[in-house]
Every structure is written in structure tokens, then in C-alpha cells.
Image 1 (cartoon, one colour):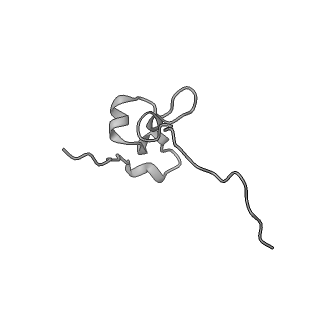
Image 2 (cartoon, helix red, strand yellow; image 1 turned 180 degrees about the vertical axis):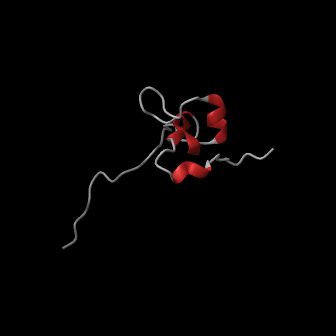
Image 3 (tube, one colour; image 1 turned 60 degrees about the vertical axis):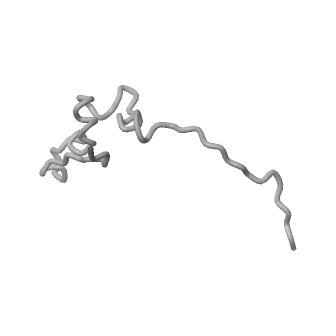
Length: 66
């Protein structure tokens, strides 16, 4: 199967009358009637845009050389 992301874009996406729901991924269109949750978060954040934990290392001090 093809795992790439497919978008469904209407011809009128550039028109002022087009709604935002015309340009979100087809699998999200099949699962969600509205691309935004009640909080305003887009449904894509439930999958590939979700928060993920990261480990970072940052310097604790900086040596200035004048």
C-alpha cells in the first residue's frame, strides 16, 4: 500500500467562498467532519503533528573569550 499523504483539494480552494476543510488530508476527511476540534487544534495534530517528547542538551555555562 502507499503510505504517502494524499490531499484532496477542491478547484475553489483559492476562492473566498472555499472553506478550510477542502484542503486537509483525505484520511482526516474520512474520519472527521470538521478539520478543527472544539479547542481549535487541527485534527492532524492527533497523528503526525502530535507532541512528541524530545531529549536536548543545552550548555550550562558559556566561556567568554575577549
